[in-house]
Image (tube, rainbow, N blue to C red; front, side):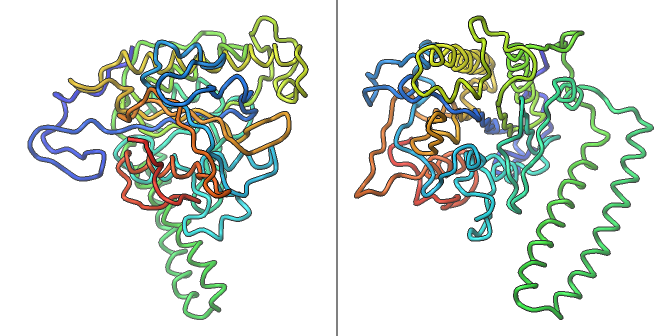
Length: 412
């Protein structure tokens, strides 16, 4: 296993999760965030419990999580107001805002993970990591840009543990310096131009300045960590890359746990689509997308259930592993990691983006319930209320996120 972050070995001057420093030789264990999005949703009847409160019975899809019932909360009645479009709208999962409507909001369609990543800044080697299996991602910047995913296990492993040769680091340092110089010149030219353009063009230039600042921050972070040694591990990937979907998913979860445990990053998103090779699931003979459009056909639903129970079983394994790992004397890694699991699709078969399946685990919240949020006078509770609660728990000082109307009532 990888060497975890050790409080006793930290330097006397520290940066805590909120960005403040302490000189008393102690450090508050930082909060982490993991967001897992399933492109094809979860079958509602098998996901949502029939009863609310603490005495609910675990439905079929949540049964693999039985031993962790007090470590998570199931939410029903939450979605993103006005979002429709089926698969074309699943990219709103972590933001609540379509990319083509981003300009109507102060922070665009930035996703919750990227908002949290901005808060972390350069405290970790990677401000955030975006992983993807079988398709695109779920993370978007405040400029309306979809953030590419890493879809190769070896690439993730190398980023976390493989040291970069000194000659390459020297070249990279030179490239960072050149790029910073270019940004300086571009920024000066843009600032001079802003004095001579219309109000509309001035807004576009402001967006351009924001992009420049984001690139500058990434360059600064990359340069700051360039010569710092990476974490060590005795974990090894298989010599032959796995070809089955099941093996790939399991290994991505293993690497996510290591990334958090070694404090290489504190923010991770993983988007799970389908498979390009074998599913690795006994009894599954059709494609994932095809099965998600089941039309209530029992044969398809049986195969879809196999896939979806695999997902919740892997989630249970991941959460259990975090719970068994100490992050501090009085807290497990799960206590210090909020894990959001769900989808931007409420019902894939009907292409509905309503009633999103959402589950939150860990993070120090009081869990163990099924919490339902019925519409009040026809107005539903936005899922972004949950996301705002998560961000505040993460340490972000904000009273709004996306389409939120406040924090989520009853979540403590």
